[in-house]
Image (tube, rainbow, N blue to C red):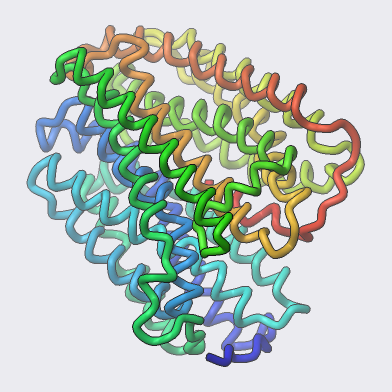
Length: 488
């Protein structure tokens, strides 16, 4: 099937329409990765939910998004990018509506699982729509604008979420998605061309790597479930499920390797991990984004339940991190051709670890400016040295034809890192399911968790120091570095 020519010009009316549709779609997906944290205590009170339910509300979204995002990109190539993009929008809207009206924690978690699966269709295909419609000369500007504008949602997310919770209800954190999704659908119909897929009629399902995706999703779910629900399960069953989860993930990798060797389409090209820079970058990503996901999850809950912050105050407390990233990430990226990636990826995690250790001083009655603000600022400063360099390292030695897969894998690793950190940290620091009713125990657990998160950052720094080369990086892939960072 012939693809329409990519001839859209940046700055034209139609170009603005297509860009706006992509920004709105990916923006709501990115927003739901950050905005929900500040609503968790209110959700727990209203639905009489304990800590495990709050963990599932966040991890349910990360589970399906992280494990299916590569499938979402493949479906766009096979079935048509606009078709999959709009399907994702509709599914995300239905799931958001379900989240907003959920009468129980269990139904909210179910809706969040669907929401994450819909986001896995939206995120890769919003970018793919831009690369397929804008002419090559304007593609970089369009992707840069998409990255920056969609990233604004991470700035306003905690603030807007906190305001909605305090002024109305946590339910509006989800319902606010609906007008943006409706607008994106209208704009998509007006501006995005058909962009047909590559499959032959009746053969689409055979071209999708269903088996690997099912094994990976099942493996992640089986690993996460006993970590969150450990208090309700016999010890033998917990260890058995953990072992089964590892087996399923190993089977997923083996399945992908065999499929790739046979020349069939795969969602996870295992051969990419033979590229040393790519593998090293993903090890650093796993460590650092695990620390980030776990720290932000527990910080928002601890500030509200342990220190008595309102949802808005908790949202504003992490704003310095986002401001620093917006101000400094691009500048750090500009330095990489001269300094390389090993130096910032060694220094950045160590600085972030220092910020997390500063947060261990939080106690009942702590002042924001003396106990929280210094740690948040130092942690954010370290992240500025991580975001662009780790994506650049992941893409540096990857051949151009594998750039999309490499970017998607690095994005998925970041999501999965947060998934496991949120599931495992409460277990490791001894927070029981009733911790939300015990502010003192929650604060103590938070302090212990920050030590673990700091350790993850140090591990990331050591991985960068030992696995990454010194000196400038000569990238094969041009400006791909912003593609993953936008969604984090």
